[in-house]
Length: 280
Image (cartoon, rainbow, N blue to C red; front, side, top):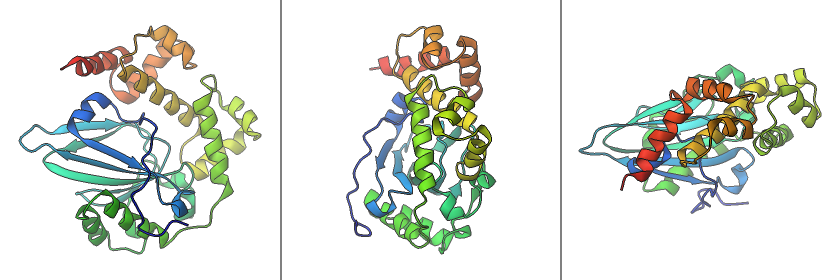
């Protein structure tokens, strides 16, 4: 077992797909994502640190398209537990500062919360609601820590104080969500339930209890992550074909879903991304 506070942690290699306007973000902030210590890996997907120095510059507004995961976040306005957010999340970054986040595996926060995760969807709780800490003191300790690893060590110590037993259901949920990501034609909940070996109502109850959102929501969010990621790379793909590749019924359905959540049409989002990519 990895010792408490050990480091450095292993970096996450996969590209983040939830960060909107990633090319502009790279100019404005530093994003580091690292895997959790071995004993916390069954529960924590990874830790993330966002740091920036915008002194003398205009504030930067960074949007993200959240995953179906709970987070613990340490930031200047206060530390908090965040349930799944169904819309986009926008942060105002100004001056010089940093934020630490703990992203839990989908379904893994059920053991900490000890009640359906749907009860905190689109909600935030103080850390002291679940962890034996003084909210202000631990937030200050994290944000004033020497470096990323020191910040993470404090957060991991807090998690270990109330670490639940490993729940095999977390693995089942992870497999189901991985299947959604791997199969672009997986657009129907009844088909997903069949592949998972569950009834539709059983699958819906499972997601309400452990994930906090419906299987249909997870399917749509997974598709939107892929759309946003590929458009941000400036891919020269016709949207009608793009929609078909990603399992949408037609281009109109893709445009409607994307615009409602991101706030821009796919074509406008791609144009804005290209303008940053081409700017020397």
